[in-house]
Image (cartoon, rainbow over all chains, first blue to last red; front, side, top):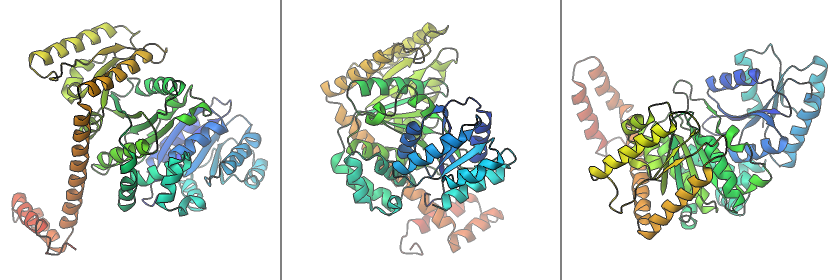
Length: 133
Length: 333
């Protein structure tokens, strides 16, 4: 994280998933929590997110997942981050069944946020994930 | 990890060798300002001075990012290495920002091919003058590590933004039909700094009216003697960036302007102006910091509270503080 405390986070929808209402709400929540949100929007690939993370020197990558592909795509993102020799934490938000939580964490996802998370919980989870790097 | 520990000269060499992660890291330090940013400036200075610096500005929603996206694609295809600094406003309340320019700039630019380009989003961050300090330095860094051209994209509001774009080699102002922009641009002082106008969304009704208004105003500049003494008249290019029309003409006009600067030997004048603008911004920032420091000093607080209690006039308090400020021997350590 930058020393001045300004967190820069990338928000993206990975793959074919058009449900972007949630990610827009999260972008606003994080902005209002004082963060700089680099909003990539829909239909991103692990390559395009890595390219953005490098250029933007992002402190975290937030993925919004609503199409049940999280067990494939979230670990693929974590792997891509490691292959690019970045230490950027990957945070997942969306409709994630309880039984998938532990496998995602085991795969290296820093935080998983569900629909019940409050604005403050979302912002704090990002701060914690960034601070733990 | 490696990320946090590498010293600045090492990061700089890595960035020069094409490591994008190192450049990204350096840009963060540039944005943060302070001693590290100054060190980067010193390192980059000898290697900079080659890039064509292009400022692109216009109202929110004018299609700047979409246009920049097209230009970046063209430039990469032509074998150039464009860098883009996309400036978006921070919230004055929370300091946060949503930086959304990449959505459009990345679109159609495959990250594989896009390896030749580099796009960085920058928030204006509330602190006064921060942008005026960070932008020239980021541009110098891009230039020094081999990017050319360097495109600064910014919403054309606020004096700092106008200054930043006006200090480019080539200033492009993007207009659209239906917003009364011709008059708005005059108000904002944008018209004076423009070297090139783009009427974007030219497929929409009213685009020709915008062109006519602009043309008329350029005629007036000629009448009032404001037109540059080199006889250069800013061209007006019609484009529809979303449909992919006219962006080729935009860059042709940008190149033509650079050629004009070179032909008339005025590029160095631009550079001098840019350096003056930057030095002045840095001086003002230093003075602003000194003023804040003075106001929070023990005697400063005292004069301030006297003024707050209406015992003395604000002008009197200012005079007292200014006197202290200009005497570096007294309690300014």
